Structures are given as C-alpha cells and as structure tokens.
Amino acid sequence: MGSTPTESIGDENMDYEDQHWARVISVDTTPFNKLKTGSILRFPYNGRKRMVLLLNPKWHDKMHALALELLSIPILTRICQGLMDNISEADPMDPNVFYSTYISKQSAIKTADCYRTFDINKIGGMPKVLTYDFGKISRLFDYENYGEYTPDNAKTESGEYFNNAYTQLAFPNAFKDVEELVDEILNGKLEFLSREDLMVLENCNVRDILISASPKKIAIKYSEEYGRNWQRISNGLLAGDSIPPAIILRHTKGNYLLAGNTRMMIGAAWGFNMPAIIIYLDKDKEKDIEEDEADKADEGKDMVDDVKSKREGL
Image 1 (cartoon, one colour):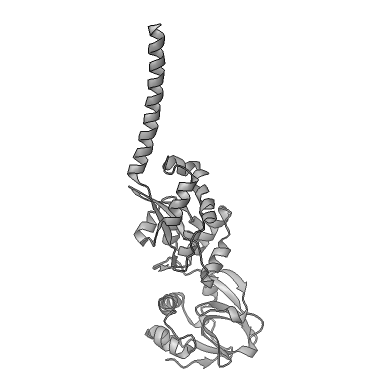
Image 2 (image 1 turned 90 degrees about the vertical axis):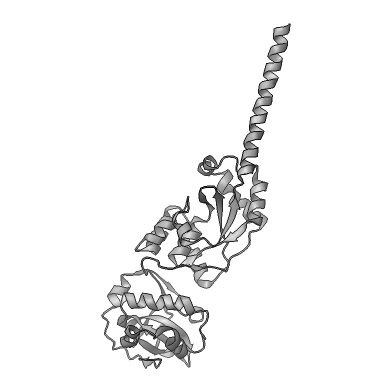
C-alpha cells in the first residue's frame, strides 16, 4: 500500500491476532511518553482491543502503527528484523518515510495493507507493552551502551572466583588474591564474542537461548531458577541503559564465563550480543605459581632432611 496510512475504524479482520497472543510472554503498562518505535502494543480503540507494532506514538495527534491482526508471524518477524537494522538511521519524526524506506520494500508486506493511524484521543487508557517471543534468534546486535566497573563493583564480582569452589577447581591459583583479580577486571580488554564463540562459551546458558525456538521463555526460566531479576535487565536493555559487561576468563582451550550469565542470557533472548571483559589466564603466570609452590615444598623437604641428618650425626 506504499507509505500512505489508513485511519483505523476498528473493523479489520482479526485472523492473526490469536497467533500473536500465543507469542506474548508478558504485559506491562507504559505511559505514552515512554513508548518507543518497534514496541508491540495493545490498547482499547473504538470498542475493541488492538494489537500493533508501533512506528510513532504521536505524529500530528495520531499514533502510527502496523496492525498485527493483518500480519502473519513470519512477516512480522521480517519487519522487526528490519527495524532493528535501521531504527537508529530512521527519522523518528516522519513515520511515513520510515515505513516506505525501511518496511514496505517487500511485496508481501505491501499486500498486507497493515499501516494504520489511531486518534490519540480515542485510545482508552495507557497502552500495554507486550514482550513478544519471535522464536529462534537469527542475528544478534552488539549492545554498545555498557558501563565501566568501579573498584567496588569489581571487588563484588571477584567473589565469582574466590567464593566459587567450582570455578576455583577449574582454574586453581588463577589469581593470587582479590586485589589482583580486581585489577584484571578494571584493565581487561572489552570484546563482543562471535556467535560461534557464544555457542561454546563455558559456564554459561547462552547457547540454550540461541538454539531455542522460545528464547525468551528459556532465558526467563533459567533466570528465575537462579533467583535473578531478569525484568530489571530486560527493561534496561529496552531503555538503552548502561549495563556492566560480563567477565570472561580466556584460557588455552576456550572461554569461561566468570560473571554475567543472566546479562548474557537476557541480552541474547532480546536480540543483543552483550559485551564482555576478557581476562587472559597467563600460562606463564600459572606456571610461576606452581613452581613457587613446588619450591616451597622442596624447601620444607630440605629442612626436614637437614634436621634428620643432624639427628643422625648425634
């Protein structure tokens, strides 16, 4: 239908609505001034509940959106992938241009005739923002709004090594003390892992998220089992908040997640590749620690032998 929207009068065929509802994970009420392009909304309008993909919350006193009852799940998924690719490039003040430039290029989307406008004054109450499960994730987008660790934050994260018997068993003597690990965290290299590396990341559930047909459900399930606040992270991601990087130990055979499993899982489930601080486990350093312990053991043995020799000489 090109870029010309149609005024919604509430009489559209609702063929796809039930299918979309089956993909909804959670529902949150959000004020109009907090709505973002790309959100999936539900609100009362002309006596019916409407479900839409938001293009602009208010443009010339109308909300511009795509009516989901007219879009199949595969087409909606393609549209949302396009939004993620181009949302930062689009002019948020002109939804018509946004639609014609980034969305309506495919004939199937044009044929759907789904672009609608809604009179703001006729929308009943605050819209509900829906968390939608798009299925298996085909692409991750680097989440670049990360924060830096403070010494106190780094000290807290150091407990993931010094208070974790499993990790200490996997990498004994990796750090002499808390201060050394804190220094490594504060000065570590920041990196976005490739999808291939994420799939084999040790001590992390992100692989399960990437291969799941319901990534958000799996990520939420794991987070709740671990007693983690996944909503705080997901809300932060959607708001573009600064989120601390995960922490990864890079050893000779691969990468081991030290801290940030929930961040990695929720980020991936919401389509983001979360950054990580890489700490290299220096093989020479580990060797030096082992040699120091061996030297101490030898010194102790020499002292015992020396005492024994003196006794035998009496």
